[in-house]
View 1 (cartoon, one colour):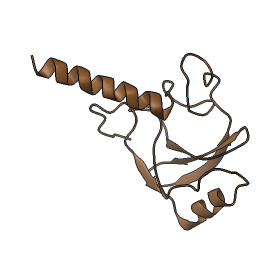
View 2 (cartoon, rainbow, N blue to C red):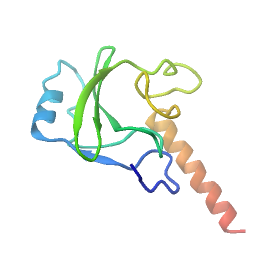
View 3 (cartoon, one colour):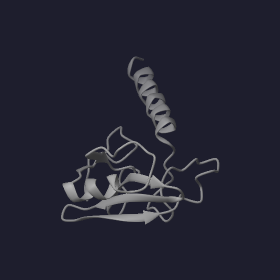
Length: 123
């Protein structure tokens, strides 16, 4: 899959969940906010294989929606072994590509990259 990844560190691909997928997530026994109907891929830009977004977490199981241009499915995973390490990876065990930090950490990294580009372009 070819996706334009210019200054974005996270894959920009998105999926809109259908009624059956929303019903599955909303039917899980979790005290978490309801799932949004549109999710973005959480893997690093340029990753191999299908896109992936966390739909819901129930105890130690994370339910991820994975999709390609022609199909999608919901799969159970556990956290990446690097979840509690210096990488603070927020992805599932066995994910493709590099480790992706939590959304808060990723926002800080993107903001830093934008600041750096602004500093070099104003010289």
